[in-house]
Image (cartoon, rainbow, N blue to C red; front, side, top):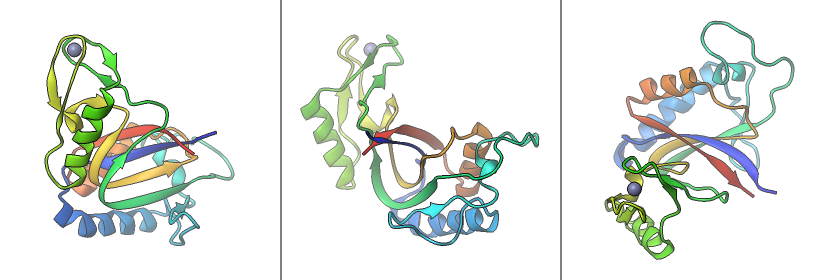
Length: 178
Ligand SMILES: [Zn+2]
């Protein structure tokens, strides 16, 4: 049974800037007590006393009481936030959801992992072609991101704060890996 994750991926952060921006993000998460400084066996920070900030709006509504399980892992460096639960891309032209053709998707990912722009994949319905990383999807691609494991659904307000702090566009990837 795969475990569930959500990841905030900072898509504008360059590889060169990822370490500096990532450490700034980590410092902020620790200072706000959203995460604890220690690392668990999976190199993730356990949830801190203010982790509830990540799942509630800023209107002050309390979300959960008591223990907040889960941990978050900061990933610095080029990474694919992939899921075992499928790889659906959503076509903006024909509204079709499809899985990209395997060979095409693997080649597109390999190009991106080498530091090149991702290769293109096509919609089987209308034929639209664009780089794999540009499709609306449950997967994410970036040089900096945070994976939240065994966490409650992230609030948009928190995702937005991460975007402001890193001065980057952000996407949320989600799915499961076991
Ligand atoms: Zn299409």
